[in-house]
Length: 165
Image (cartoon, rainbow, N blue to C red; front, side, top):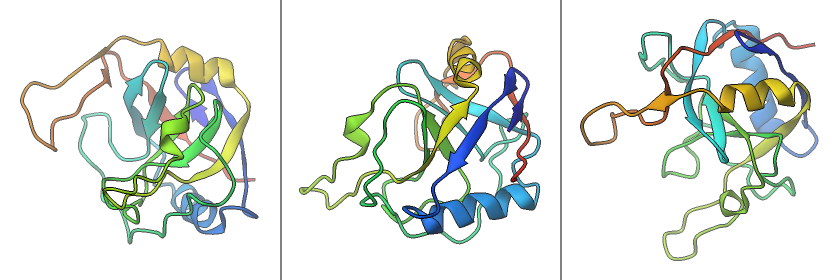
């Protein structure tokens, strides 16, 4: 993937996460990720993209996919996973890259019935670019509620293009 900070190369794991990989590839091949931004940057946790344009407009997602969180892959530093809301099977187009070993994203919550977050690949080159993105200054939109974005980069970090090879 080409970003305004440099290139990131991913290796997607279709053996362990076939649904998530097929979903990501579909959006990439249609060009749906081209021109997106990294809209959420939480140092020591994740960088997130795939769902917002440069003016912070939320982009439409397709049908949600099944959560493949129990596939044996874990949310370790340099892995890519599917972002979702509180419904375990709500992932559509947004994804994140782990900046650290995020074990809490692997754990099912028995009380709430929630599941972990599905990993579907890893960064094989360009982790320095990921870390540079993670270092940008961020802010929170004013207000409260689910529609308020947090951890937004002060200066836009563009996801220029995602190419599948």
